[in-house]
Image (cartoon, rainbow, N blue to C red; front, side):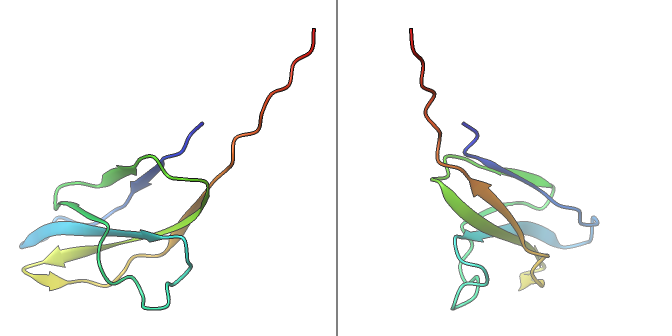
Length: 91
């Protein structure tokens, strides 16, 4: 079962790029918005794998932090993790 989400993004190399903040939730546009990042990665990263997601639909955004200032949020993407289906055999 593939219960991970591999996120990739594009962003130019700009002076002062410190990190990328990654956010995910099971709600589209959470009521309070995406307020606290789930994790952060270094500014030279352009991919991150979110492992071990429980079944459900997850929504993801990323933003850059440049010279201590938060940039805008990326477009939002989603992934659905399905509940495994049993395989029945007979003999």
